Length: 64
View 1 (tube, rainbow, N blue to C red):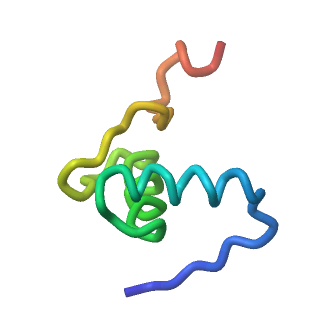
View 2 (view 1 turned 60 degrees about the vertical axis):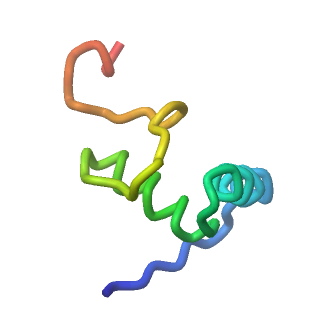
């Protein structure tokens, strides 16, 4: 598996990932993996809620 380091991430983003992960019983890292996967239209782990994760499907609506 590949690794990624995200520098200069705002504290509130980390906190929100922790909160979202805790709400469904997964780690902050798993929540971050699911957010990234969802943003690319890829499968996510069971129980992931895409609400709040905007996915750009390339449609003209997204470009307005």
